Each structure stands twice: as structure tokens, then as C-alpha cells.
Length: 356
Image (tube, rainbow, N blue to C red; front, side, top):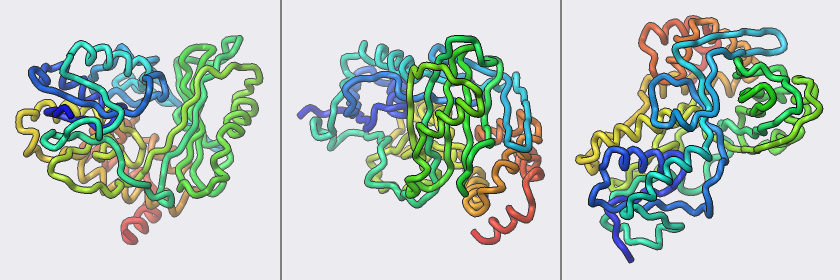
């Protein structure tokens, strides 16, 4: 079997982002790379969204950007604006096409379905895959979204609805999320923050149908695309191996309080590329102990007080919009953090802090 200098296990967002970053900056000259990915073909399967707090390589894969967004519940409505940090959505199909087109020009980069097809004994391995089953009793962000098209112009495509809590909570945290790509096309998602053991929460199709009909008042539409996912809001136990560098969610690149991962992957890829010559002795990249600590408290509050979360999210965004965005995107400073904390219910968060 053929040997490779480098191996990337998992050809999804994290694996392809790293391969693209390395190839773009010519780090794979005279080096061989194997990407292990079982899928038969690459096609659009996800939509990655985030606030653009720094430039990235995939501006040409952006479906749409917004400067305005809303957060609402049955009791509150808040319309917010950020010209400095637009909210963007990436089309995974365009992302895959762009990267694979670039990688295909290098004959030293090969794709395989299984790791057993190559000799990786002496390879540097980058891994983006969780090993074994993850704890379904832990806290997850699980969701299903459909992109719909209507015969008439219905949506205001200048403003997205980030969180609509005006829906059945079922003793957990539940909101809908609407991204209007045009005046007659939008991605609408039902999102839960809960464990994965309660099967009753997974009637996603019915949830979406009722929300589109009753909340949005849309009866006539066509479904163009469907996506579904589940993001662990905890750090899974990853087996430590000096030969393996974990990337993506397996490498801790998911922000636990939000589920945001895409831009963290881009920063991690850049860090690995900048330190590629010393890759075997590289220091582990982390989002920051500060965010790990604050997210742990926040998620404890969420798990113990799900009924309070619509109000807590609403209060959070009563701080400066850019301050909140920086905090949620791992770019906040000490004073930004204090402004966010000052908006939170003191007793509720103190109890979570004391009972860690």
C-alpha cells in the first residue's frame, strides 16, 4: 500500500478547509496527502452561517449577507443592526466544488474511502471524526431546515430572523430560524437545545409545516432543499495520540454556547498552515479558556432553566450588537464580557457558578 506524508481523516468542512489552506499556500509541494472520505459524491448538504468578524477564503461561496436581524418571542421583539459584522451563509455545494477543483490540480493529493486502503504508519494525521457513540443524554443543538420557494414575493430579504421563540418549547429550548435568500426563497429551520434521548422532539417535518403555515402565513410553497444535523454542546472524550492532530468539532472548534464552528475551523486551518514546518511539535490550538468557562456556566443555566432562555437571549442582545457578536464569535475583550454579564440574571447565573 502507498505511503503518504499527510493524512486527513474526514473530507467535510474541517478536512477540506485544511487541505485548501495548505494547497493555497503551497505547503504540499513535493508532499503527498491522502483524504479519507466515504461519501460517493459531493453535493450541497449543509448551510454554514456566521457573523463575518474577519476575512475568509470563501466569499465566493456566500449565498447572502445581512446587516439586519431580529430576535423575538411571544412577549418581545428586537430588531438589530450590524454593518461592521454582516451575517453570512455559505452554500456547502459551492464550497465543496471550489475546494475539490483546486485540489484536483495537484496529483499528489488523493481521496480514499477507507484508511485501510493506505499505509499511514509514518504519516502525520489530521482527524475530524469522533470515535464511537457520543453521549445522547448530553446537551445537543439538533435541527432540521428546509429551503422553500414561494410563487409570490413574501420575504423581506434585507433582514433575517435569528431566533423566534414564539413556538412550542416542550420543557426544553426551541426556536425557529429564517434566512431569506431572496424575496421568494428562504431557509427555515427548527432548532432544539436538548438531549437526543427524547424522540418526541424529532417531529421536525410537522414543526416546520405548522410554523410556515401558522407563524409565517405561507400556504403555497415548494421545498428546494432539506438539511438536518446535530451538534454536541460538550467536548467529547477524544483519545490522545501524539501522532494525531484533531480538527473541526473533534478538535474543539465548536463554540459550545452557540454551535458556531465554520470560522473557528478557518482560523485553526490558518494556524496549522503557519506552523506547518513544526507540525509534529505544534502547541494545541484552543478557542480560549475564558469562553470554555463562560460557556460551561451558560449551558448549565440553559439545562436547568430552559423556560428562562428566551428572556436571557433577548436581554443579551440589549447590549451593543457588535459587543454581543464579538462575544459569540470569540473576539470579545474583558470589557465586552463585562457588558454581556451585566445583562444576565445575576441570581440564576450565580447559582450555576456555585454549583459547578
